[in-house]
Structures are given as structure tokens and as C-alpha cells.
Image (tube, rainbow, N blue to C red; front, side, top):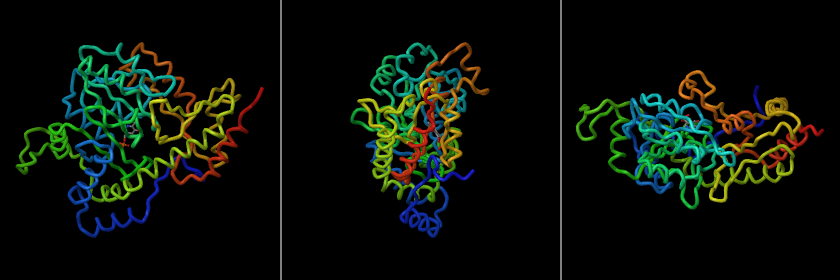
Length: 372
Ligand SMILES: Cc1ncc(COP(=O)(O)O)c(C=O)c1O
């Protein structure tokens, strides 16, 4: 079905076109070319982090980060039970075991109170995912990481520009990983980036990204690496998107405030949270449906919206429900992740969404409610 109101769509402007044409005409169409360094420098300075290492996508940024931190066989990595599967996949690519941790009921990200119980002698790292644009509770996570000498990889795929207290997410852990997939806050088509303040780690990330090749001695390989490079064409798009990142975030936050104002008093609808310590960028504005007080369940509401050409997405499935990951969570329960997963909906959140469209979506949500 072609939806009239999609959940997300990129906003590609004239500068994006100009940059991509320039890159194509220059002949620098692969992973060498001036836009790559420019994109890495501009994005890392936007975040206030020293080094940016662009990758072919966000999943590979996560894998590259774990590989550079020497995570491998016999290691365990703590990951949220409710997230996109590529987080656990990246852990599994290294040979390590993903250990799932339940979500916090109030802000939906990994619950720091449940982290400590999952730490064993094998635990090497925590991957924090700033879910749907909402920051994790970074002080508590960093304290646990320090106490147990664990690395922290921040997965900021869904939260470019979000803030915890007064610092941007991506500035807390050893490495931060971003995605620039077409539905993300800024896009390069496919693409990703690792950010770090540790220059030695940055160098390792660069070597591993480029087949493990020595940066000073061409075709000399001291380690086995990968080809996880971004192209100059993708970076050209990214440089132009980055010019408008603050505008995109402002629009996402504005959309959220309009949704909030319409849905605040609808019984059975729980709004997308923003904690006092957080600046949520509402990558996907999301709500929970409490079927008892709303009268119909989440799936029924999604169907009604779909019939009116309004696209929505269900929340991710909890990782431990799915065949490849079950064996890593035998006898484990994640009640909060399970409840969020069965009640959560991502609503249309594009930067091109109009106030009238939000009003219309909210009207449908209000009318779909069945009062007893
Ligand atoms: C939390 C999270 N991590 C990682 C990724 C992977 O990014 P990519 O699709 O660029 O591989 C995504 C993608 O949507 C994501 O939502």
C-alpha cells in the first residue's frame, strides 16, 4: 500500500543534489574523495568529538567498534532486550555473546538498575541504545562501566543530536556509532560513523575499516580487517544533510509537541517520554496503547490508521522472542521490554509532516478509542 502519510521520509534538497553531482563528475565515486574527510570532520565537530570514522552503514559501525575494542570469543556484551536486531548481530559477528537487559518503564531504554545483575567475569562491554531518539541514563551507565571496567559503545543510530543533561549523546562512551540510513535524522542513503576521542582507537578503527591495511605502507596487512568504507557519493549527500541537522531536530521536536498537545488527554495513550535530564530528538514519535483503558489494542489501532493511509510501525520485537537470539536468554524474562513491544507504535515523524497532518492523525487516534 502506498501511504499518504509515511512514518519517515528523507528531505533531500538542492545542496544534496549539487554535492552528489559534483562527486559523480569528479570521478571520485568510491571510498576516496574529499567529501569523506569533510563529512567525518564536520560530523565529529558537530558532536564535539575528536575523531570520526565513516562506515558503509550503522550495523558495520557497531561491528567495527566492537572489533577495535578487541571484543571476541568468550566475551559477553550487555545489550538492550528491546532494540533493532543489528545491535545483537554486531555482537554475534565478533563471536561474543549478547546478554539482554530489560528496558526502563519510564523512558524505554536499557535499565541501569538491571545491568549490574547481568555482569559476569566475561562481560567486556555495554551497548547503550538511545531508543527512538530518547537518551539513556548515561551517568548511571558510565558509573557501572567504571566500577566493573567495561567499555561503553553508544548506539546513536536513532538519536543524532539528542542530549543527556547538557552533553550530546555519543560523547560519553569509548565509541559512539551512528547510522545514516534513509529514515534517520540525516541520511547518506546507507552509511554510518564511529566517533571517538581516543586517537589510538581511531587509528585502529581506520585500519580495520580498510582491510586491515597499514596506513603508511600500502598493501601491508598486520591484521585481518574488513571493507567497511563509505563512498564519496554517500559522504557528499551527508555533508549537505549536515548543514540542516539542527533544523531537522527542531522540526522533530516541534512535531512531538504538537502530538503531545493533541494526545495528552486521550485515555489509554501514553506519550513519548522526555525525562528531565534529556533532550529527546523524537526520531520516531512513539506512543503506547493501554488497551484496557483505550478500548482497542495497538494492532487494531494500526489497522485503522492504515485504512486511512497513515503508516505506522509496531515497536521492535523483544530480542529473546526471535529464533536466532532465544538461546542467549534461556529462562530469562524481560517484562518491561515485552510490554513496550506489544503496546508501542511509531507514528509518522517525517520532517516534512505538516501541522494539519499531525492534527489529522491525532483526530483518528482520538476517534478510534472505544469508550466503555
Ligand atoms: C538502534 C539501531 N542500531 C543500529 C542500526 C543499524 O543501522 P544501519 O541500518 O545503518 O545498518 C539501526 C538501524 O536502523 C538502529 O535502529
